Length: 167
Image 1 (cartoon, one colour):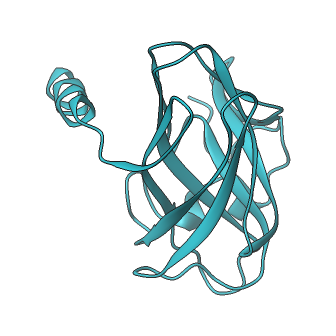
Image 2 (cartoon, helix red, strand yellow):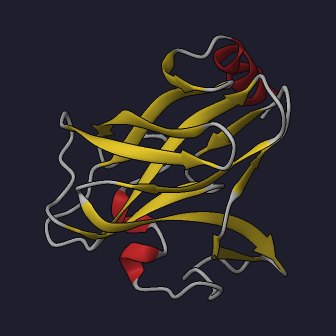
């Protein structure tokens, strides 16, 4: 566990910047490949704010009808997912959208997300404004398990318990 945390800290020391808007840098935007027929996909990235407090307010992409911001948390030994209206970006901090934590959901996909492909996503910040970034699609097992293992792929509604998550 400690070694894993050290690896995360070392990896987090230098963020490859994919785009910048205002004082917000965006790094490592990626999405997990989806199975044929999947209606949703997950998106992940790093946000680093060198300016005044800001918020990620939303996103849009031609690959889906809408993009939602989500959080995941453990409540009474049950993993729960909820849509959030914004993601806070405190001054001088890095915020990671990752599997099992804060993330984006691409809702009503127009086609499956295929490993090796990429697609544009427009991010909207409260103060910094808008910026378009390119998300690279990684394999289904990338950083946290296959795409079919998440709540959305299993049809679990927001706020509901994830199947098999009780300990």
